Image 1: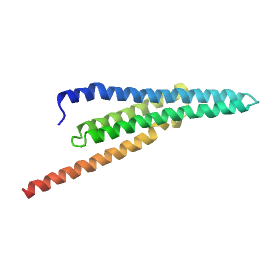
Image 2 (image 1 turned 135 degrees about the vertical axis):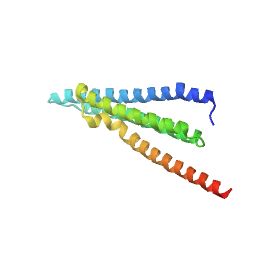
Image 3 (image 1 turned 30 degrees about the vertical axis):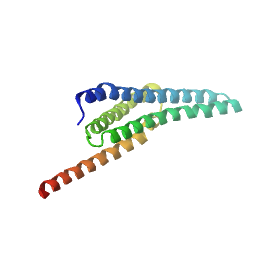
Image 4 (image 1 turned 180 degrees about the horizontal axis):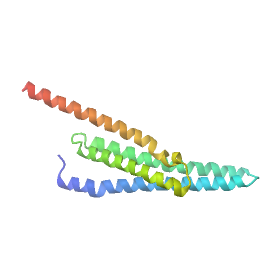
Length: 161
């Protein structure tokens, strides 16, 4: 059972830092993706695309991918850490799952609004969330099965005594 200071550290320090990192990486992805699209439009207006322009566009295409990978990496590292650290007490894992569900739903709704403002396709806006959302669903299913198994084991232990 976690003590009060551990609970305080998780809710006041760990979780806000995690959320800030997630919002920062998502915002960085949006900025880089929008910049890449603007540069592509500008280059397409020119009739003469040089080798240097092609190289620049290739490089600009990699940066949003790095921000997307950072979004996923932060999510996975945090999930693995919490599943290992709190394998006996799933309270923090449950909080993590709920917070991420709210985070992804919030990003989804914000993205709907930002598609109008940034003139980006909805697919580009959601791309960083696709894989983490799938993992979140799998983690949620895993915790449900784990909880069910623990309940069954407790029932069996009661009847065995």
